[in-house]
Amino acid sequence: MGSTLDDARLRAQVIGILRRIAPELEEGALSDDRPLRRQVDLDSMDWLNFLVGISRELAVDIPEADYGRLVTLADLIGYLKQRRA
View (cartoon, rainbow, N blue to C red):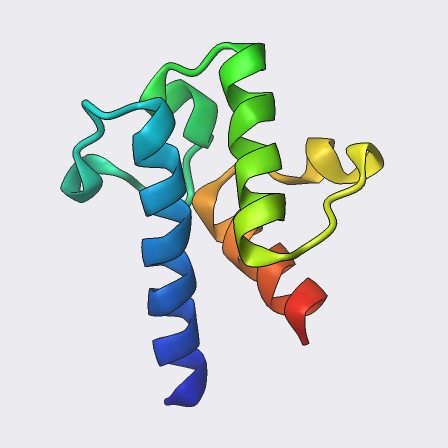
C-alpha cells in the first residue's frame, strides 16, 4: 500500500512539473503506458526541459544516457522510485 501512495505522489509531482511546460494538459486524459511526448505533444526542447525540471525538483540525477528509457509516465515513475530508493 505504501508503494501505491508513493506512486500516486510521484505521479502528481511529475504531472505538476509537466503542467509548467504544457499548461493545457488534461491529467485525466493521460495514459501511463503511452509515450508521454506524443500524448502531450512536446518537442525535444520541451522534453529536455521537463526532464531537467524533474531532476531539479525531485533531486534525482537523470543522466542523458537514461533519457531513451523514459518514454511513458510509468517508465518515469518506476525510474524515479528506483533512483530515490
